[in-house]
Image 1 (cartoon, helix red, strand yellow):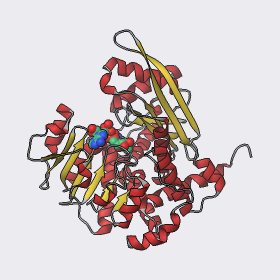
Image 2 (spheres, protein in one colour):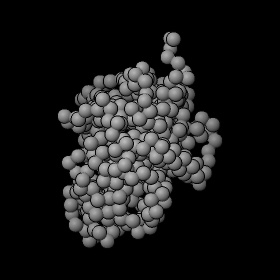
Image 3 (tube, rainbow, N blue to C red):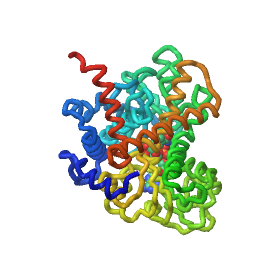
Image 4 (cartoon, rainbow, N blue to C red):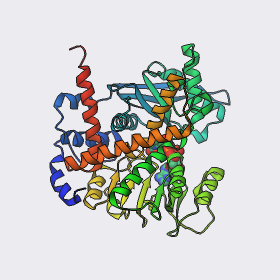
Amino acid sequence: MNAPTENRKQGERQLSRRWEKLPEFNPWQMALQQFHQAADVIGLDDTMREVLSHCQRELIVNFPVRMDDGSFKVFTGYRVQHNDARGPAKGGIRYSPDVTLDEVRALAIWMTWKTAVVNIPFGGAKGGVAVDVDKLSPRELENLTRRFATEIAIIIGPRRDIPAPDVDTDAQVMAWILDTYSMHAGEWAGAVVTGKPVELGGCPVREIATSLGCLYTTRRLCQKLGMSLKGARVAIQGFGNAGLYAAVLFVQDGASIVAASDTSGGLYNPKGLDVQELVRVKRETRKLINYYKDADHIGSNDVLEVECDILIPAALEGVITEANADKIKAKIVAEAANGPTTPEADEILYERGVVVIPDILANAGGVAVSYLEWVQNLYSFYWDEDEVKKQLERIMNKAFDDVFSFAEEKKVNPRLAGQALAIQRVAHATRLRGIYPP
Ligand code: NAD
């Protein structure tokens, strides 16, 4: 790899004329900043910029749900398809009180780059409902999911757009979507969602896939940097699906988890936390702060700044900013979360020589295994776990090598390289298809 300062100098021209500082954090504006910066790297023409800087389809639905007390409450949901030039749109559904159209748009465009960067035949989409699931009973959650599935059924489908779990949605939610969609279609439509229960055609590796992909790419980077994962100190922000399994898998590879946090707070022990105990506490009490073993209690965001070798942001967007980027001590940032680093912070980290494995690569294991699940559903032929893991490792290693070689060739940071490579692939597919009508 080239020295970061040298790269930085040569990369100065990457600062697009469209690149401006954000007045406040807005994921969609951030995604567009990143897009234009990456588009500059490959000299993307104005027509293609115009096409790819818009989402192809945006559906907003306001729908009533019957609550347990017999009343009805109206919820707002979104399904956004950014692009389907390379294949059906693909992306998760999140339930979060703060979800907005701009957040869903950003997550959709990142899905387009993610599927392109790992070179699987999907486009990018995302969905969400503005809801706090902790305030719903299981029946209300099912009612909400089935009604939302019906609302978006006009644009999703096994060969159109395939949802998956994301923040606060899980295999059960996917099972309800599968069932609702199949009831309306009048046929089994298992391939309409991925991340569903194994008994309904889900893939046993899917639950750990995002974290496994994060491990594979970090392992590859460690090899490249001459670092060992054995004994590496790892800090993880977020202890849900992505963060929890990252902790378990990195420890299996010999690393030590020195800090972890969730919304209840953070824990720090430079000698290492007991991961089995962290998992037990999280599963049984839902709050990491109930971990009683030796650890300092720190803030949820403080884990980002502890002494460590590898930092894994695995919670939300926009947590590494220009305000804290120079306080990050890790040598590697492996982005399990989507959009955790702002463009300003990216520049600072790059200048400081911190290597970021960008989200579209580091957390692409989830969508890669979703692809393998979808293929198996369409074929009605199922592989064993070892085969899926082998395929996943092959996909992730190839994507890692593609991104890091492109970064070296173009003398840009890995995020710009990943996005530029992805944009090149999507733009090429769009040109091959042509713009209809001609
Ligand atoms: P999740 O709901 O299972 O877990 C989120 C975790 O983050 C929870 O432990 C929550 O307490 C914690 N959290 C929230 N705000 C926090 C804060 N300020 N500080 C510390 N912790 C905080 O969600 P998930 O599926 O693990 O997703 C996490 C991130 O990974 C998201 O950005 C998501 O888009 C991304 N991602 C997930 C997958 C997947 O397969 N699950 C795939 C790709 C990307």
